[in-house]
Image 1 (cartoon, rainbow, N blue to C red):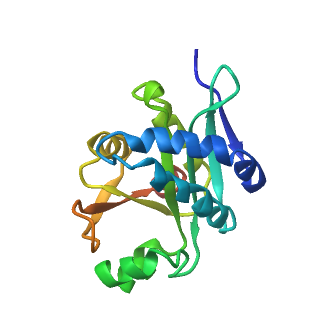
Image 2: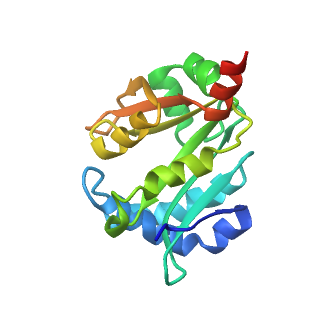
Length: 192
């Protein structure tokens, strides 16, 4: 049986916040992230900021019991400092030109999480495809840990490529910024 996916809006995402947080906490408690439970507390704060961003999108994977088994969410980056907490750090480490030139007016995949018991069943790939479907943007980008090999394999298999490696102060493991040309744009380009 295929896991049903649903696109939800900002209001619904906030209403499901506790369930999304539980999925996030379970998914990111495992290596390589190994986030302690307290770190997932910031998820709801970030979610409130994320739903207010232009072009916010969220897709959830439903479980048989009606709960959330996974989700993907993101938004359009419409100005260089869309996320004041981490974009200034990214500016300093990578450079504002990269942010303005490659990331502005593009879709940023902010979170992709699937319950550990549901991983490696194609749900993450379906969530990724669904959250990106029909976007008005030419490209999408994301940031993940360099050692998140399963996640990076998923993205690479769907055409994402590394565009920068970022070493954040205070973090031992570097992050990799990945980008992809969105399928609708690829199709339009092939018709020219």
